[in-house]
Length: 149
Image 1: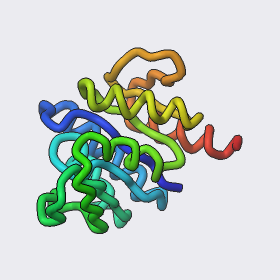
Image 2 (image 1 turned 180 degrees about the horizontal axis):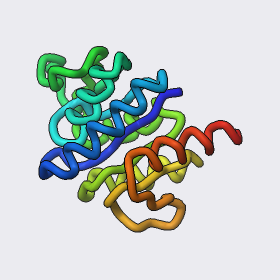
Image 3 (image 1 turned 45 degrees about the vertical axis):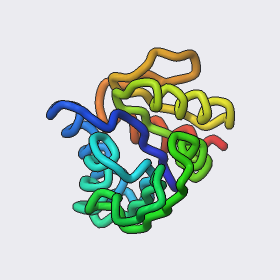
Image 4 (image 1 turned 60 degrees about the vertical axis):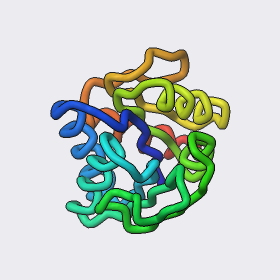
């Protein structure tokens, strides 16, 4: 399964650690991580996934593949700016949202429009997003929902 992990590009230590744990759990369980490929939640999730032997895909807003964080294995440069948010969501079977601002909110909306299950960890309270308390609950929720489809 591919899981799009979306969230803030600038986060504090607590959210960085939670995102890293989400990535670690996804990697350990054999899931691929899709993200925007930059900093914050994106970096932390990729780091955790790589540390657990997982695979990471970063879909970048710019044209320079070298702009990806060091934990992205497969880099996709788009030159699309924030429009690339649609591609981040399109390439996942489910989404986990961690913290975040308006970019994360747009990705949540895109995921819900596609009918994807979305787990929310300290993020926007939007109808359709399953609010969870821990990284484990986030991963378990998306696994359970994908298993039902």
